[in-house]
Length: 325
Image 1 (tube, helix red, strand yellow):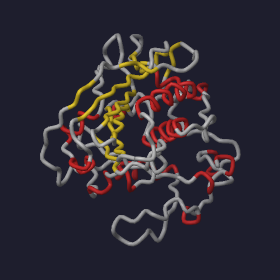
Image 2 (spheres, rainbow, N blue to C red; image 1 turned 60 degrees about the vertical axis):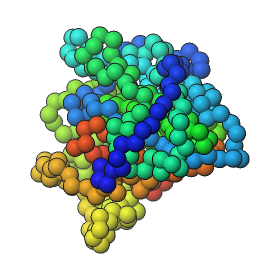
Image 3 (tube, one colour; image 1 turned 180 degrees about the vertical axis):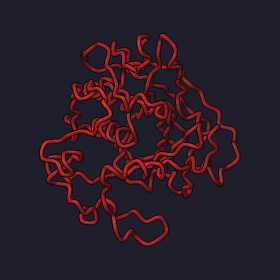
Image 4 (cartoon, helix red, strand yellow; image 1 turned 60 degrees about the horizontal axis):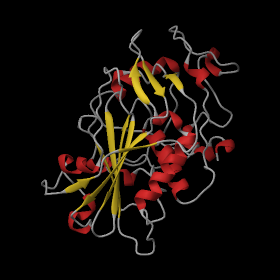
């Protein structure tokens, strides 16, 4: 990361890691993953740190609150409490769900957040102390946990939440959905705004090299359509903030299937991104990450493989499909 601060002493006292399990019994078994999930590019672990400054109006213990909220969350998202294991038969990933739980670490620091500039521009090797280190070995018979949390409390009363997650499990939008749900439960909601729907039968189809055929679709059945998706994307409002220092795009047009391969090659070129793209406060993904304190003053992604970057387009559901509001 550009303009990183020099590593500064950060002494932590960590308690033994515990495993937070679903509040009630959840289904057990082995869950297969999709072909896309099994792509090697998805294997790295990604880390995110949420920084919360002290809030004198809220004296609740963040550790207890998050532990309970996580247990409640796992009733809805029980697969994240499983372990990722490769099948011996074909080497494909599967989630082994036996109710083991999510690793949950608690630490205390001898600093206040203000003296650390709220973890702004921290060097990765220092900031990674705020994230529970997972033993990532997909070849092991024991597998590995796809998700972990660490709460670090600071002397000033502020705290950080460190999250480690593998892209095999979910992408950036999926991470945001899960942890926005976690915040809702931590704030005392009894029901989630967005309840996950498991339709696992969609994952077991075989690839035959032929384009998907959708009844009633355009282009002779090659392209899926929706009554809520206009052909001219300028009318959707999806891309109104797609300004990279130039003017906003004057034209945005969906690609026909014949153009995918050529444009995919362009997209996969090594990215040259402005450092500000690494600051998740600019994305709007995690804008509701409020556990009853103030909203986080800093959200920073950490990637040991610095050449990797996530870039996504966040669609606004209400403008596409009213049922998703």
